[in-house]
Length: 269
Length: 324
Image 1 (cartoon, each protein chain N blue to C red):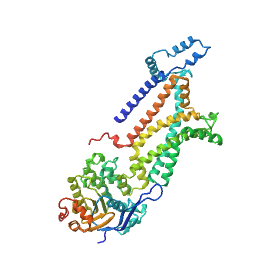
Image 2: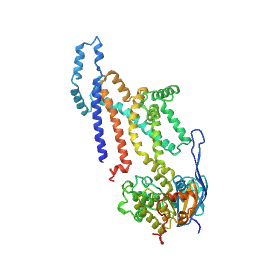
Image 3: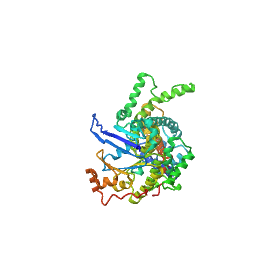
Image 4: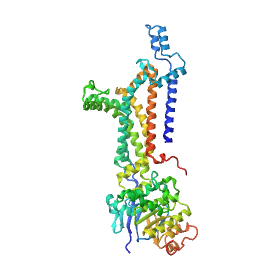
């Protein structure tokens, strides 16, 4: 099957420009290549500073990569300009780690979910509200909560709201950048189940970025391990975590207590 | 609404307190308006005593304050010794001119500071940003007095602008369009000084506030939805950065006003600046108290306007404190 997104030799360098001309150059991404098939989940794990979040921002085109290609449905989106990108952006949505800061605190839940729809200018106000309310209900927030502002929600509810916002544009690829990390265990499990549900009903492709190996094994069809801006190992969870071949992976596994690999139940949930 | 009514009560209390303090301090200062007469050999000491009694300067302080409060209620604000008329009407005419100057300068300086600051923050560290930063630092380093004198010199040499006053002779006989032109020409220099001195601080604050929110994840998310850049900057980022700026707006009205007093004196603009300086030098007690009170009133009203703005601009304040 043709992959939904295929990344080839993606490089991102940051140069810290000093007062007097050139400073040092940091390579956040170093020739990263991978691909994800439609409807599948790639879990991306790695230590802090390994380049996971930079990769997420580059794929969502919120940061421009220095070189390399990002093939999305057969188009190289890394080469598009801002205007052409606007048509692609709805297809790739990002959910951030901290829902408290990724939601505009001035907006009500309803406004947050309708905000992306407004930009598309395809629907009338009434239709937009209907769509937003339906989506809120789908992700587990009642209609009565629609007029509340983000400050009045709990962490888990906020992350649900952020997911609803990302889904409102009916994206094909959802990038979850440490989306569960700021939540406590029971809420993590709820949101993880919600993600699996949504994946099967909307045929979503996930790039699930985490440092939690157990969660990566639970959600990912494949796991990719990042270290110092490179993907050093990639494969099915049982293989990568059961018999790690790279030193960085062994380090991550050793740092996690208990057994990680619990085979995913047949049929998703 | 409770937010606003509380602020209104605060404002009235502040005015009341300031009136008591200025009254106290001006009477603590040695001497009064009639002291110079005492040195004049042509005026009999009995006449000075009689004059002081007539203006009730020989009465104790609380009594004078109570009488003054009474006259405030009637709109007189006491009596000016040197103009020989109630202070109220005297001040209002001047205050109108001052207000005209400061309101124009406030609007103009914010109208310039907002786009400049946003532009600067958007290209943080880039060439336009550094250029603006250096220019603003330069402007900040020039004292307003030097700036005013420099512009006056320029006006006198070039002859492009009148060097003082509010209107030309024979202003009444001009057609409306020429009246407007005459007024604009007269206003240009004082407004320019006020705007140029206020601008650096405002631009820096707008830039800092915007730079703080531009990298907020919710803006990134909004950008990810394909929201156009300009809309992102002015509809999303600016409101998020607005709260400290709105408070600064109230403060800037007060700052422009006190800057305006100086500019008015240097450029002989018939506002409350020259009136107040004269009154202080001749110890025209009630004019001083009235002038100080008026400045406080402007400041308080400026802050109140900022509060109303804040209330209107931030839905979270309107909704009241959130139970968590």
